[in-house]
Length: 241
Image 1 (cartoon, one colour):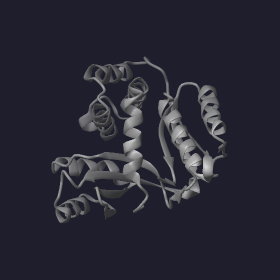
Image 2 (cartoon, one colour; image 1 turned 60 degrees about the horizontal axis):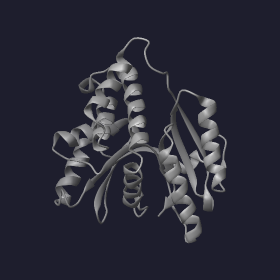
Image 3 (cartoon, one colour; image 1 turned 45 degrees about the vertical axis):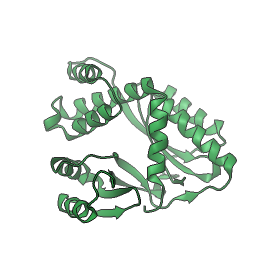
Image 4 (tube, helix red, strand yellow; image 1 turned 90 degrees about the vertical axis):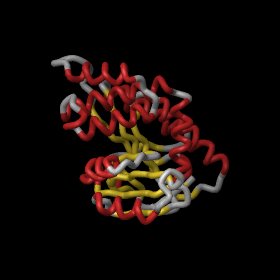
């Protein structure tokens, strides 16, 4: 994964999130509700919920919004029933995309995702058409500026159960098995670490560089449009930008 410009992707995503906070808060509320229904309303006993709350706070979601989402999901029979659906396909320049959605209307979401792919000259594929280019893993990023002692960060990461530690110029990348993600993250949090970003899901095995400025612009616009769609939770791709 080294050299795949993940930090650039994160900075772009943060900027897009700032320009579409309403969509971001809606997405976070859905994730909170799913986490509560899967593991209960207590974040101390529900690692997934604890992780989502942390991300919601990092996105500046108000505490009242977070509490309402938890209470709505905890109420018997209340709220919408969301399901997770994953789409895959190719965008401009042959870049592979995996799009994770949470929806209460399959037809609406499928139409939206298909529209985004075709609008930018891409093509939505069938299951398996792209997934072989990715592997499921957890990725945790820690800022070098905040934690300068590389040996200490590496030692703590491996002790916490990380599968790999990759020092980059601006950050440390800590990779985990998908099943170990929450355990490693909580162990590092207990040691006082804060994260630039963290996620668990498909990670590209190799990345593709795009030199054509027009294609790069289309890819940026495609990612922005996905970011603004309230049903699309996460987008994974193999573009090295």
